[in-house]
Image (cartoon, rainbow, N blue to C red; front, side, top):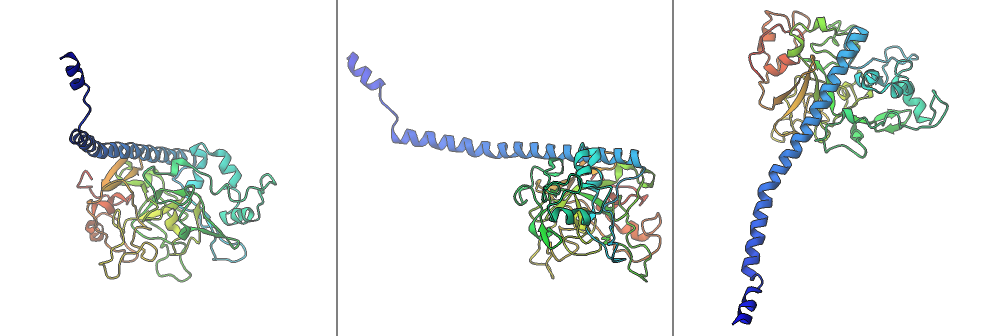
Length: 360
């Protein structure tokens, strides 16, 4: 009797019982996996927010030291060809000393030569500062402060997509990417005015950073806490940007000013739309994602305000871009063109002097 009881107590699992246990474990994994993914994305979003906050603080420190926010990019003219503009330093390169990157700033010679000249030196494997060889390592420096952890569309070691590469002395160069883009405001400014242009200053914009801009805190009439300074752009659809600068500043190509700044005409997180006529295409349409702001965070993107605060902007924010019709009182109180613009457009302008009728 005792032996029989022992045999019964040592019985293993039946096949049905094993299948039930496997099903329970599978169900638990299915329930837990989304929560784990959400937790990971929350951590990535927090890291991205910290990057934006640190960049915004660096903007303020730059302003305190030099009296203005950095230019979106510096229009570097070719000394041998008046009116012809070359590769130019962007606001990210200008701010390197305020991001604990003084050594990189000096090695790149940002304050001494043009980006075109520096790239030409690098293309010949010549480091003019030390006489040594470093190829393109300086412009491909991996600066994590400029990377959003949620961005998965980059190439190699966080290099810009090949479509945005620089052309340096006949050599194609993929520089280090930046997921953080300066806010130039309402207009798509591409460079200095052409001779005889009807608009004498087409590069003047409503944001805080554009070509050769000199914007001070006192110029932000809408308030530092109501004005975007920096926003996100990922690499998968928006094709990211570059902290070092721009190629062909006056160009409307994908290597123009959109490498460092974005404007308010494209909708937030706009994607190619095959049903549109013509469809929005990032590499041909100036109102598409390559010129605006995008992220791979679900349902929105993050922006740093001029006061350093980082805010979350939902894709559904009011968007109503009213075209610029020429010289006049654009952006000033009482101008009906200003009143027509949406919350998204108002947040990208420093001087609408109109209430933001939303907590965005």
